[in-house]
Amino acid sequence: MNTVLYFFVVAFVSYFIGTINFSKIFAWNVKQKDITKIGSGNPGTMNMLRSFGFSLAIFTFIAEVVKAGLTCLVCKLLLPEFGELIYYFAGAFIMLGYNFPVWYNFKGGKGVACFAGIFIFSSIWYVALIWFVVCFILFLFIEYGSVISFIYLGALAIATTLYVWLASVEYAWAITLIVWLLIALVIFRHRSNIKRLINHTENKINFKQKISQVFKKKKGEEIIDEEYVQHKPEKEIVIEEDQDNNENESEK
Image 1 (cartoon, rainbow, N blue to C red):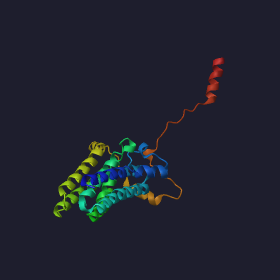
Image 2: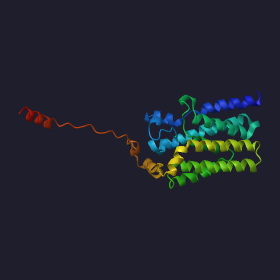
Image 3: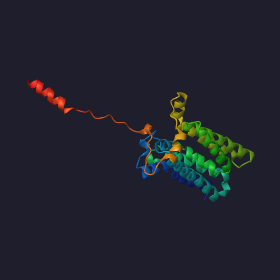
């Protein structure tokens, strides 16, 4: 099997693994809700956090991280002759599958958790984990999910770039290109968030509250985020007594 065919198979398999969306799976199977029809409508971790709270969001995040990172790692182990290049090449097509899934008319999530998984399972996994803890703490003070996503992924993109060049990793130029193209994709997918940040209209996550709800929630009690409760107008109340009085007066 020649090199082109190897890369074609990796691209094909990675893309379709990327189309697996755990926010849709968990929202439907646990809450019997379509995540694309509630909250922001985005089938991703942040919308899971806003709509269903911390617990379901963290499970979604972990599932996406493992899906993406493990797929890249398996590709690297099966094709060691291509090293880091095949790892990030697989990651690129996982991201494409997640963002533009063929099953859902090419309308997917924004890929932050998938991208995080690529970094967390990479050769600089220790940097990715330490930086995740730092950003988790920052999230308690900077309650804008898009900002935390940019801080996390942007810093790791810089760290990856430094690593592949300083360690003289083969095909460093190609890996750098892939990583920064994926950063560009994440920014593009967050363009509406960026516009709202500029206009000071971006919604806060209230991360502290989401975490506190995990400990305050009682058995059998469901916490509903008021931001996503659909308020319907009350039905008009007709007072029959007044209507009867009016009829009697008209008869007189």
